[in-house]
Structures are given as C-alpha cells and as structure tokens.
Image (tube, rainbow, N blue to C red; front, side, top):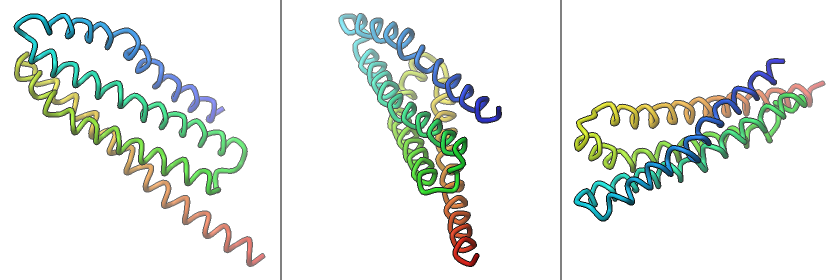
Length: 161
C-alpha cells in the first residue's frame, strides 16, 4: 500500500509538469516569437532561452522520476538492498544535479526578465528550483551511501553464516 502511494505521488508530480510543457510553455513561446518582430525582440530572445532551458530540464526530470519508479519496483520485489538500487539512486542524484545546473545557467536570464517586468518573485522561483534540485541530489547521494554500507554489512553477514 505504501509503495502504491509513492508510485501515485511520483505520477502526480510528473503530470503537472507534462501539462506545463504541453499547454502553457508553447503559448508563452508563441507570444515570445510574436514579439520578435516588434521592439521587444531582445526580451523575446531571453524568454525563448528560458523556455529552452525549461524544456531541456524536463528530460532529466522525467528520467529521475523513472528511476524513482524503478527504485520502488526494486523495493516491491525485495531487491532494495542491491546494486540496482544503488545505480538508481546514483542516477537520481546525477539528474537532479543536471537540473540544478541548467537552472543556474537560466538564472541570469530569469534576472533579466524579473528586472524588466519588475517581478522579483521570478528570481525567487528560479532559486527555489535550484535549491530543491540540490536537496534531492544531496539526499539521494546520502541514501546511496547508506545503501552501499547496508549492502556491505549484509554481504559480510551472509558470508559469516
């Protein structure tokens, strides 16, 4: 039951981002492309740059969610203490770090839009995405290390019995 809840939670995390990528971001891109012919062309390039980074960051985001689902499958099959779980956690860590790196690259562009639109909250949103991705990366790295240690102890115990 707990594993099912976590699977549903992972899917519930992924669906809004998919909706954002399919419905909202294309509308923003179309509006930005429409601005290329007017006086706001420079700002349109900045917005398109941010949108490009957002779309690129969706790839590691969904790959990390997939690794989370794989990890839940390992737990469900009583293979939680295996190298497969360690690999899944390592991939989650790497994908989270990539997302943080992409948004660190986007932060100057977000600053330009926030300054232009007089919306300092935009910069805060970018920093929250970076911070939360880094927290996930660090947390999965710690879990990976703990899991490796548990596997080592389990292997030693299996060899002594």
